[in-house]
Image (cartoon, rainbow, N blue to C red; front, side, top):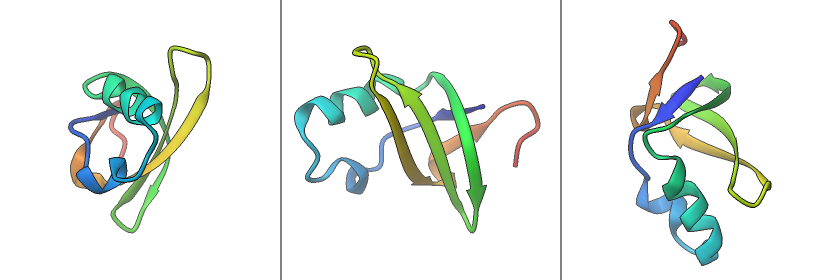
Length: 69
């Protein structure tokens, strides 16, 4: 599990408004850490409409839980 500390601007650039809102909604919440390597983390979450999203962010934007890393 992991927490997205903040939203990288580059991640949101060019996305539809609904996707931007879904990503902003997860900031500060515990979400699934799928994998991490080479300084990047893959995170997975389900938005309020039940849609699953996977995002890849630099690890500096993530707090790892349960001794991950």
